[in-house]
Each structure stands twice: as C-alpha cells, then as structure tokens.
Length: 259
Image 1 (cartoon, helix red, strand yellow):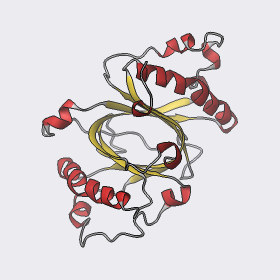
Image 2 (cartoon, helix red, strand yellow):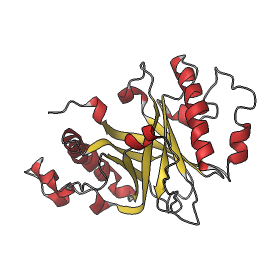
Image 3 (cartoon, helix red, strand yellow):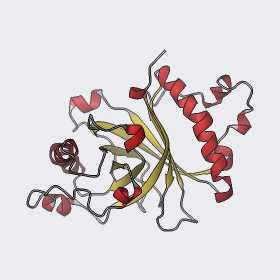
Image 4 (tube, helix red, strand yellow):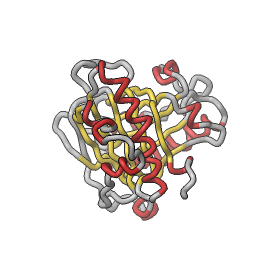
C-alpha cells in the first residue's frame, strides 16, 4: 500500500456523530513468508486474548488481524493489517501487561512486532454507519473483507450520500438476501496525510467467501435505481484504493461478556 492520507475532522457532522465516535487505527505490517505462521500464531494465541481483556476493562471495542490476499507489489507492500478501536485515544494501553495474562511466557516470545515491520499507521474516526443484518453470524460470515479508501472533491457530500443512500440500499439488499455483502461500514480518515495518497474516507465490505469478495457483482439479485451513482461518480477523484484481506481473527466487544 502506498503511503497514507488525511482529512481534518470538522464540526459539520451532526451532534449524534460527535457524541458516539471512537478512534480506530489501521496498522500495516510486513511479515516475511518464513515468519508468517509464527506471526499469526502470536496474534491469535496471545494478542487476541489481550484485546479481549482490554475490552472487559473498557479500553477497546474492536480488534482484528487481517492477511492480504493477492494484489500487486506483493514483495514491497505490507501483507498484514492490524486494527484496533479505542474508547479513548488519549488513554494509553499498556501492551506490555500481556505478560500478566501469560505469566509463563516471555514477552519476546509473544511479541508480534518483533517478527514484522510496521510500514503505515492510519487514524480513523467512527461515524456510526455500520450494517450487520440479524441473520448474519460474524464468525461464519465475516471471512473476507474488502477495504476501500476513497478520495473525493466534497467529503461531506460523500459521507451524507453514503449515510442517506448507500447504507439503506445495502441494508435492504442484505435483509432480503439479494447481495453477497454480509456487512458494511465507513469511517473518516483523520491522519496522516500524504501527497501520494489523498484519500479522506474509508469503507469496508464483509464477505463469507473469497469468490464473493472478488466480485465483480455484489448485488446479483437486485437492481440499482437509475443513475444511483451518477452524482457520486462526479464527486469522486481518481480510482478507489481497494485491498482484499482474509480475516484471521477478530474480537468485538459486543460479542463478549464483561466481568
């Protein structure tokens, strides 16, 4: 992935958004092929348990580790995406305290960063736009995710369009079983900014199979309204930056019970 992006958050969003926002980080990491199995083991065995413990403490609401599938420049671009959503971005999480959960383990033997290289770190802010139909079982249906980074002329028009048009259309399609998408959401990119990558928002689409994630038609049984994306396309700059990932492991605060 090319270097990163930004837009400063403004007061133009509604108070509902302001009161309910959380901060999310996307950490892109490069892991050598010979270290990939060990890296994934450390994330799944140790760090997922740490994330769950932090959620019970009220510090995190979401954690995930994703492995990139296919794409160009595979030797030079990161192949792991680590996601953390913080309740309070100014409250530092003590990552070293993982040793308290695994007292028989040395930190160096659990440290996933020791066998990877962080290449990019993106800060995002949640806007409350997420869809997860009631009939979806995340552990079964969230196997692959398509990450989309967007650039546009008018960011607020774009976000309003997604909230008022895209979200309800996707929800109707999901509720009626007329799309291969199992979950959708978006967020505002806060930092960093780069002349090489000017994206201002991101969205994601969950799928249960790689075939569905690859497309090309996410809505095979549903017709789009005429000219649905006409104004949307006029506001868009360039092409979407799209990556597909296999979901290795995720922890959602809504799926666990606090002590």
